[in-house]
Length: 131
Image (cartoon, rainbow, N blue to C red; front, top):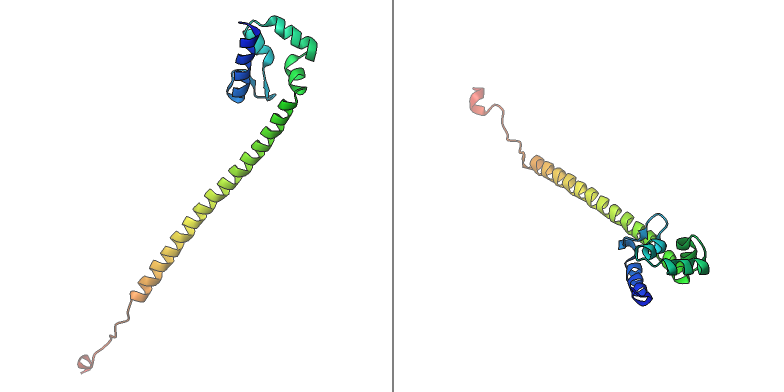
């Protein structure tokens, strides 16, 4: 595989980022070293290490302005996702509370209707039974 094909494949893997097998979740980095070693690009790895320093993964990505922007954007997106999840949970809780309140209202309404349907029937001793 020549360098052009390798770079094309690397670009594809980097574009996949989290879904790539080379994504290092703890560091939130793409494993450039692993990618190069898996594709037998030892010479390119050594050349990049000479240019950027060792360890290649950290030194290469720290110096990348695009990566820094991506990292900041991902942090903002994670915060937005967390906020959205919090709002979703609050909304779900409010639906449950609303349902409970409606059910209580219906119970109270039924109870008041039952009370209003009860009528006192005049009774007691009639005049004929007094004799």
